Amino acid sequence: MQLIDSIVAEAATFRQIRRDIHAHPELCFEEKRTSELIAEQLAQWGIEVHRGLGGTGVVGVIDGRGQGTRCIGLRADIDALPVTEKNTFDHASRHPGRMHACGHDGHTAMLLAAARHLSRERDFGGRVVCIFQPAEEGGGGAREMLRDGLFERFPVDAVFAMHNWPGIPAGKFALSSGPVMASSNEFRIVVRGKGAHAAMPHLGLDPVPVACQIVLALQSVISRNKNPLEAGVVSVTMVQGGEATNVIPDAVTLQGTVRTFSTALLDMIQENMQRIAMHTAQAFGLSCEFEFRRNYPPTVNHAAPTEFARRVLVELVGEDGVQAFEPSMGAEDFSYMLQQRPGAYVIIGNGGGEHREPGHGAGPCTLHNASYDFNDEILPLGASFWVQLVQRWLAQP
Image 1 (tube, rainbow, N blue to C red):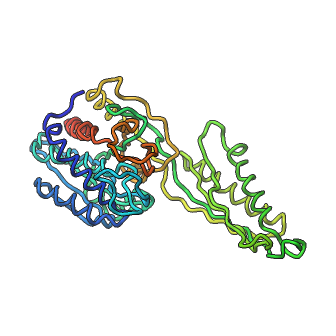
Image 2 (spheres, rainbow, N blue to C red; image 1 turned 180 degrees about the vertical axis):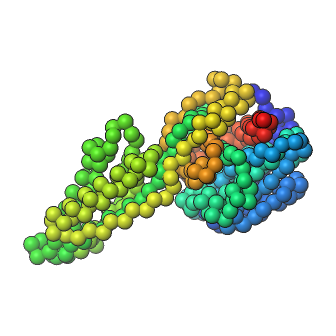
Image 3 (cartoon, rainbow, N blue to C red; image 1 turned 90 degrees about the vertical axis):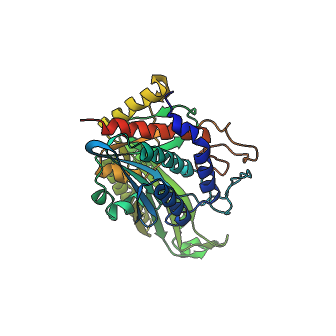
């Protein structure tokens, strides 16, 4: 494993930064303290700082001393989740209802450590753009930074992001080209009937059994309309209707999510869902409202940058340290950046949870879990990868 000595020597500093961010989590577009900390550190190291993109986003620009016009972007997400932390160790969240349960504190610390080394050495030609992005957790912070002119102001040739992954051993990475994270979409279906006394159902139009029919029928889109070789998920996660056991409600609301790896499949699923919902309600003499909201598009790694990153990883940890990443039905708004620039989304192993200190919660060390904690031991590894990726990428003809 070819870690960079100066980064290893400063590991305790960035461990403290990571834990400070963990103790003070901020939700999407509210990351004022976090962005202030990032900007102060970058400025202290002589890095050109730009603020305000996407609201609370921060961009650090590092120019090398060598000759070259290439420009590479490195992205870290900085927001927390609306989760009450169950850990009680010293760096646990000090704000109930907010927690870094996805490791964005670690992603931020790794990119800061890389930026510190790159700004001190500047042993490359070209430019590095360090992107500290807000609101990945549902706010679409990447989209908002792009709307604020991220790539017009900082025209990178390629952009990369890295995310920790519990279950993959610390010291290992995972990477694949093509779709790696799914699109995230939400739907809302309101079945409207006519309320009545439960003892006299013939006087009303009961939306409950019709809503149940729709829930079951929606799964036929996956089992009978979708190509079996394509991945897609339709999940009804909320059913709301009624206020009393002896009253048939006027309406029932169904809500849920749809996940796919392709836009064409998503188009088909949306069209068929709407047809099933509307026509099922009509068949029973009821009306229906159908809403479909597309959130994050699929995250699709570009082949050439992915292979380039893989070669750098192999140099860093060896062939056995880099495995193929099995695509996840989770979503990631780095997808917006990959729609505008070539690049890749890299996975770094976070281990199985054995790194957690006494006082951790009883739950597993998985993403979006109240007992999760980022593995500080991988901070030098992630930062070393960023530095070596920059050096290799910018050294290309």
